[in-house]
Length: 277
Image (cartoon, rainbow, N blue to C red; front, top):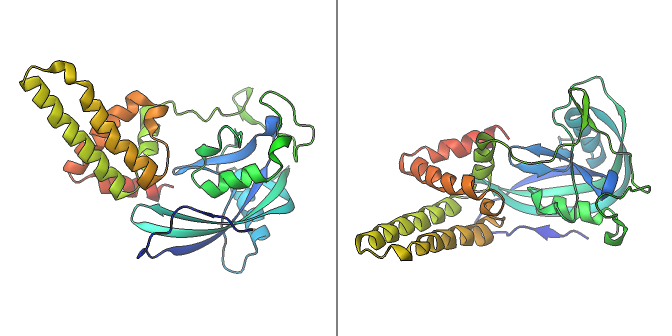
């Protein structure tokens, strides 16, 4: 079985990107994830020339998590079409089950964060990663939150922060971090222009209602703006609007993005986030 995720657009040239990843299960049915600039990913990455998928995972886990990995059975392969900035890719991914083995004498590139594949699968940047996490075991075998998983593939490792044991809550806590997240959620030019159109029309309506003294029509300003924005997210970008989790930061970021587009700085912001991914 090779499921396909994302939409292949006609006339778009896609760059093939072979890759391999591993699903590492921890307590409560959660799976290990790393958070990059574009979002959450399963441990793993792009395959180097001459590498097998298994060799890719072993190398990537050493680099990302500073651990050896014991690979289990292959979950499957999947194809993911996606676009970042102006480039489009066809991800050809192989997924394994696995468990962390001994640590290496290197510094990890990422801290391990733990996501439940059923309730938090939409946090993964690629839909195929959520699919692999959910497919690693039968859905019915996932324990409920807070229950231990005696049958898990590995004992959940923890991250030391100061003198405490800590598993990251995967919550954005600063606006600077949110702004980069916001840019990643608006990676397609069409998404940004639909936001621009909705915000512009909403402002025009707001000014009109104030001018004619009909201030009680103010909610229409929000309805129009969000209608364009949500259409862009659900149809073009195919993700969930940041408004659902971060309404205030999302609201002010719409205007910030609009200003950056007017002043010609938005493309450089997108390039900055992509380069740092």
